[in-house]
Amino acid sequence: TGESAMVPNSTQHNVPAWSIFAMFFMVISLGSNLVKERISGSFVRLQTIPGSFLHAMFAKITVYSFVALTQLMIMFAIGVYVFPLIGLPKLNLPNHILPFLLISVLSAMAAISYAAMVGTYAKTQEQANGFGAISIIIFAAIGGIWVPSFVMPDYMVMISKLSPLHWCLEGFYSLFLKDGSWDQLLGPVIYLVSFTVLCQFMALWRLRRQHYI
Image (tube, rainbow, N blue to C red; front, top):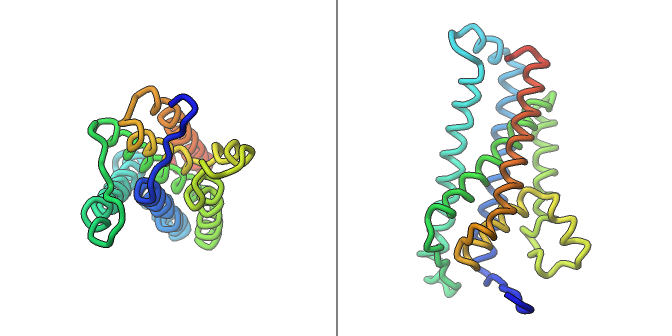
């Protein structure tokens, strides 16, 4: 506020940062799974089942959303209950649950949508795994996951805003440091929703081009 900056402690940075990093790494499992199903002909067999192919995609998104949120909750529980036992600062969860759930769900959806997009465009599992892993590492490096953005030079701070992981982390920063003010969450929410919609649109456009939907 004013001329002073609110800087997170080690727990407030590392718990959400590495949770987000792990969440986005589902691009390897989901992306390669979509490629495998497409190559093996599972996509074609799914089209013979009554109902829309989009139902199958929605089922995948639902399952991976549950996995991502469960993983996130476990990591945050470790920050609350385990970190104090090993001499690290305890993670104090925000008082407002609704904004916390919103950022968690949007982060999970952004990760799943990106994985789905990679899986629909990759031609082989090797392409999905290689591109997916490298892109997430780059996003993490420039997005403030490894090196917090508040210690970066100004030009890197501008570049970091291109990373979806940066906006996920900014959302959690707002929750932990500013008690989840909706005004502070507006930027991360708009970016994550836009990123999710764009990835979903590109994935569906690709599937339509390939006549799966």
